[in-house]
Image 1 (cartoon, one colour):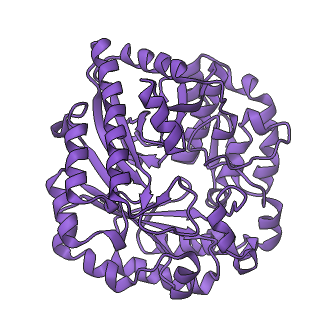
Image 2: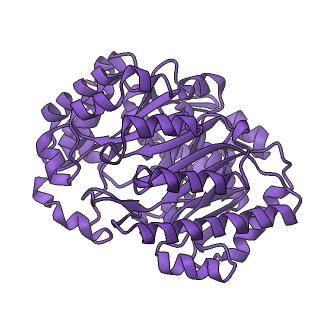
Length: 463
């Protein structure tokens, strides 16, 4: 891996220093419409009911509360110590579950929920009694004996070994820790203090045996990071040996997330350094036996994502890469995203609006999108490239009844420059991404993005 990436230089990085989507959906959130309403979302759910009870579903639950504000955070989070406020929120979350259950019952549909992801916010901020209430509420739409995965995002400062044992007893089999960086100076700058010793103590061998997979979330591009400092973090990560690592780029959007103004732009690494942090981390992890999955995931050979790549069942969705055929997501809670058949939707951000919608017996939808045939074709192309770093034109032709070379004539021509920079190889009816191209794979996907072909700049959209 090191030798394949050795000729990535400053000139190449500057050439491709353009903002690109991470393509957790196509079209991306920036193209979704506020004219999309609860009625449109119901149309998507109705369509889902016609697909049959065997279709596996992914349930995402958003718990927005945190005990303190991490300055880097781009998620919809609310800092509070008011347990009454949290109780009130959970009441409304259950009302939303009731709306969903009533809809399914009306349509004689039993949802085949196979995976739950509980995110936030900091869901481990819930007290045990509150988590008990959540599980009981979910049992009205989820057969827990039928689950393949139940994942919870863990804040090391709001959990304990006792809590982790309790989660295991409740059916949680995967946990994800928001590590970000182990350097004390970086942690102080982003207000996320957690020592390696704390994490190591929390994840004792006995605790690890309770979970099929432990994931670490890492961020690069944070204040005071550089290649040398992040190497130290990665060495600690390798020693702690998580089953899966998600390595994301910090998005600095202080105009959208006011708390990010507490991070000085002058303290952020410059673009070349950020890219070198990522490249050197890729090399370090793959040299240590981790598989490089898609854009930003690294997994052990025993992890389900590694197996999904080999079995050709991996998929990309709003929460990253997922094993199995979890193509449809149902979200519960503010800001949650939904993907059902050819419909996308996102729920309201503010609790006030979220509560108001549910009081009106409406699904709390802020915006959404109904995919056209062209959108679905391009989504499949982008997903194939992201998931497998290759594309067999015939796969798309057979699925969508098109002549790939004619349909994408303009896009194939546009790939020439990337091919000259040794990002990919085009041979006959096949596109193969090179190791160098893995670093810039979003730029390859962008060629097939109809909405960005006119020179339109991509902008992050969110709360």
